[in-house]
Length: 362
Image (cartoon, rainbow, N blue to C red; front, side, top):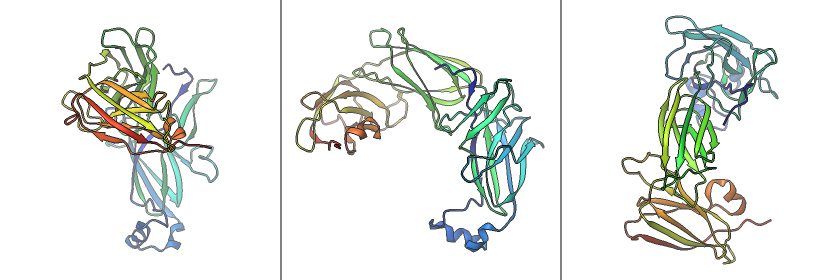
């Protein structure tokens, strides 16, 4: 997926460990918090200083030597103040920043994009923030929903902001016979790394894919929408800042010849037609497979008689989801628990029998 040249993600990824982020008054921990700090509920609005410290790290976890950090006040009814209420430079041997703010207050924290190394970005999170280049080329901070801290007098909060140079990932997907697979959905997301951002694209007619830019880190690549073929296992890898990583040719693996079948009917006992069925890993995969529970490895839809068949599956513990995802499935059917099963006692073919899924109706 090619990002338009004027569009750059800007949310600063925050890990906040704050001594005094006050729980909701309905929280059972609320009274305990007040007791530990010798406070009453009326004390919440007591004015006084609160300390906000932190560092700016690159994608390898190393502190940046230079950078400017901005604090924006959170305003009721708006996302943030028009301009920063405070700014400071990284300083000291630990290259930390430090703010003493007048509490109580709520704020957002950012790295000034003009102060970090050229080409560096914060981990993107499209749904929350962007940075746009104005006509004169100046990067300006626009609305962002992350990095929210609620501070009371006497609080001490620590924030880590992560920036890095985006890289790119390329590769090619082929079937069992080596023929390219076109229009497969390719998804890259964090693997054991903070953050929920995903980059997606589709393979072209030659099975090739390219994702650019991709924020560096420990990542996982997954293919979707390959039904009736079996999805390849996920690919885990480490992308370094500015790196172009070629994953080479990824081939759809041959299954173990296992066949899974069943029938789905609605609450009236009639065939539930065109219902999406997904088969997921249900246990700890063997050596050589990515340890990623819940990865979809095959999918299909029910036929006119409500039946479904999944073929050439691996001999692994599995889950069958008759109402996947609270997405397309939830709009047409009421969620039902996934079906767990193992091939140990079922031979090469398992019949799950008839299952009732309630059809959603106006």
